[in-house]
Image 1 (tube, rainbow over the protein chains, first blue to last red):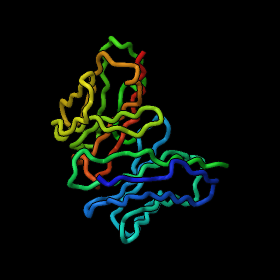
Image 2 (cartoon, each protein chain N blue to C red; image 1 turned 30 degrees about the vertical axis):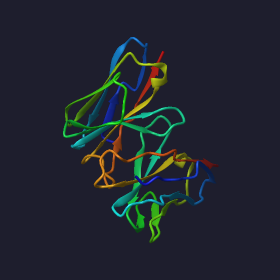
Image 3 (cartoon, helix red, strand yellow; image 1 turned 120 degrees about the vertical axis):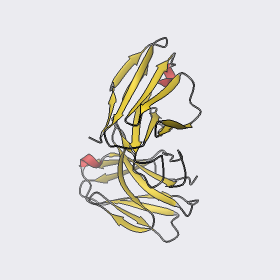
Image 4 (cartoon, rainbow over the protein chains, first blue to last red; image 1 turned 90 degrees about the vertical axis):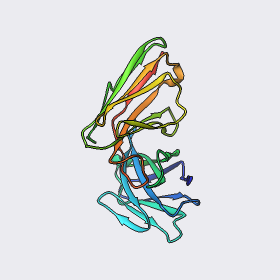
Length: 111
Length: 115
């Protein structure tokens, strides 16, 4: 399993762009990188997933360098409602029951 | 709304009680999961069901007993729990069995308190 390492916490202000980087040095060839968001007392919610280069959707962008040993979740112009825990997960389509949630990054957006 | 519902949302039980948590998914998914999230800890995968068959049991104590009568419903039966079992119990579903490129849809969770 590819272990992931993220900062425990980050602070930002409304309107700023936030970049959260995740390290996954042991990522395997078939592994995808997925990010989830979790608000207090709620289940996690899928944000974005990628395999290489850049992926963008209406919520965020995911940047993955060529060696895939890290990835960066980019949240443009955050608001107070983006305050949450963000999880980086690495898993493979051929693996069963092996997606592991780490500690995540607690993002605090301030006014 | 994620298409995954859980009941009850809150549950308080004594150590000698027997209770059940219910999860229902309206997404036509084939796989369902139970997770436990204790305070200040990461989510822990407990059980995985694929097409109503249990495919993963992550060394969960026998006081937790899952049941999957069909692909839309998942239960977690609880008996003789301990106070340290107090946590948020989350149900999730995905199109296929847990896989790296499959999005998981989570329910709102059941906040369990064991007295």
